[in-house]
Amino acid sequence: MRFSVLISVYAKELPENLRQSLESIFLQKLPPDEVVLVEDGPLTDGLHEVIRAFRDQYPSMQVYRLVGNRGLGEALSRGLNYCTYDIVARMDSDDISRPDRFSKEMEWLVTHPSTDIVGSWVDEFASDPSEIISTRRLPETHREIIEFSRYRNPMNHPTVMFRKEAVLRAGGYRHCPLFEDYDLWVRMLKTGSRFHNLQESLLYFRMTPQMFSRRGGRHYIRQEIHFQQRMYHMGHIGFFRFLGNCIVRVGMRLLPNRWRKYGYLIFLRK
Picture 1 (cartoon, rainbow, N blue to C red):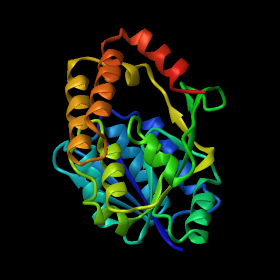
Picture 2: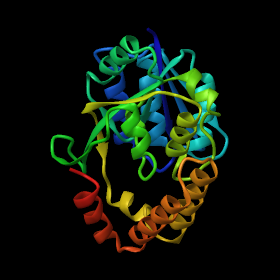
Picture 3: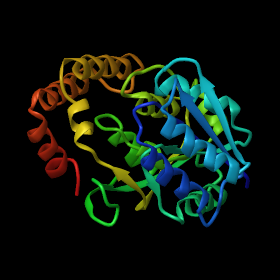
C-alpha cells in the first residue's frame, strides 16, 4: 500500500534536527511514496537550505507554506488535505525514526484492516540517540488504550500511522494548543476508530530542557484545564476523573522545571 508522510516545521527548529528527521524518513526500509512538509510561517535560512537540499534529492517531497505561524493543529490540518494517499504517517521535525518503523506499522495495518491507527513506544534522548534516557511505553490493545486515554495521552504522536479517512471522519486536526494530538485521539475514539500500539520503540524522541519548561506555568495550566473540560463535555471522562486529572496536572505544572523533569522520568517513564 502506498502512503504519505506528514511533517510540519517552524522557525525555532534547528536545521540539524530537521536534517536528521528527514534523513530518517527517506532511508526507511519501506520509503514513503510522498512526503508532505508544511512550513508553519517564515523559516530561517538554515532550515530553507535543508529543505531545498532534500527536495532536490527527493522529488516525492512536496512543500507547502503558511503565510504566518498558525500552530501545529492548523499546519497539520492543511497538510493532511494535501496528502494523496489514504495511509498517512506522522513525523516531527526533531525526531528520528528507526529504519524499520514504516514497514512494521504498514504490516500491522495491512494484516489488521479493522485498525485505523497504529503507533509505538519511543526511546527518549537528549543529544545522542545512542544514549537513551528513558522509554515511553504505552498500552497495546484497543480496550487498554481507551482506559489509558481517560487520564493520559495514549499515543506517541510522531510514531503514528493512520487511515486518513478515519481522521477526517473525526473532524481532523484542529486548533487545540499543546494538545492537538490528544484531542484528535479522543474524537477518533468517540467516532469508533480502532487503535493499536506496537510493543517496541520505533522512534528516537528528542528530549530537551525546553520541553520541560514549556510544560509548566500558568499558560500550560489554562490549556490543560481547557482540554480536560473538552474531554468531560465530550463524555470521555466523568466529573470525578475530570477533577482528579486537573488536580494532578496542575500540581505537576506548578513544580520547578528540575522537579518536573524528575517527575516525568521517575513516575511517567520506565
